[in-house]
Length: 212
Image (cartoon, rainbow, N blue to C red):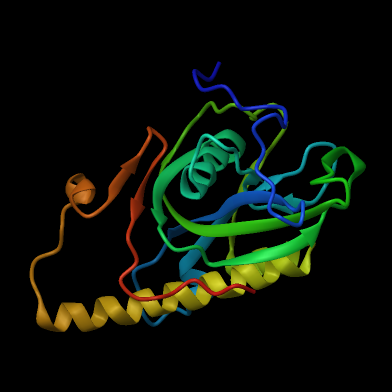
């Protein structure tokens, strides 16, 4: 049994001035190949989870509550729904507006949500996690994930994720030309801020938030 209990209920839920339910989530990912000649869609795998009582796959996300920051909410949802921890990029991939398709998941009286999505580099996969009984998780390459995205906003978030990862790689190549030895994985905290016990948050050196 997981020592971490998933949050339930809406009593701490944040809403914006238009009564949109504020949602935070992430695209968990891992690099599977170091070969730069392999295209990025096959070098990167993303983690998707099943929806309770439905057959579709989604990225971990859920309500942003009033006692946490938006990045803390994204880290919490990754842990609750997918059982992963990692390094979260500080700047969201974007902000998307969408409507709930299920009466059971109404995001407000109008069913409207505003979702902040982040990129999460996975460093730890738990064997037991809070929503394990309700959700399966599966690693997919990006092309497979794009084909399984049920909603247009999810595809756009994944495309933006690819753009950001590509920018990161270009920046790293430039830095490697100029600089110094790589930082050991054990020293990751030196460049990242710890957010609760769920993940590290890595400040972005380049890309800015784009509202989409």
